[in-house]
Length: 191
Image (cartoon, rainbow, N blue to C red; front, side):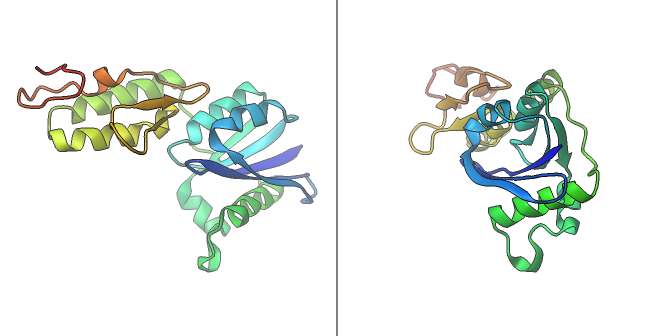
C-alpha cells in the first residue's frame, strides 16, 4: 500500500507519496481545490493529513475514492517532527508525514459525517449572529474553508466561490441574518 501525505494549504498543497518500504515515488504541488480529482486517479493508498479547516473535506474526497484516511491531530504532528528545527516547509512536512506513516499506523481523529459538520456549523453561526455586526463578516470568512468554499480576496465579503464539491452551500443572504435592527447588509435582509 502506498502512503500519500498531504500538507494542506489554502490555495496549494504539497503531496508526498511513498511505497511501503519508504521509497519516495512522487512529490508534487497540487491546487487544493483539485485534490479530489487527484485522489480519484490514484490507486488505493493510506492518505495522511494534518488537522486543519480543510482536512475533513479532503478526507471525504479520499474516502469516496476508496482510500484509507488518517487525519492526524495537530498536537501529535509536532511530536512526529513536522516543523522540527524551526524549518517548516510544505515539502518537508509532507515528507515527514509520509515517512512516519510508513513506519507506524498513525492514529486519526474522528472524521464526522458531512451532515454532523453542517449542523455544527449552523449552530456556531446561530450563536455568533446578532452579537457584533463588525464580527459577522469575520465569522463568515472563517467558515468558508471548512465548508468547501473560498471567500473573495477583494471586494464584497459576501461573495463565495464554490469549490468542486462543497460540503455546505449556504447563500450569503442566509449567513448575514442578524437580530440587530441597525445592521444593514448588501442583500437588504435587515431593512
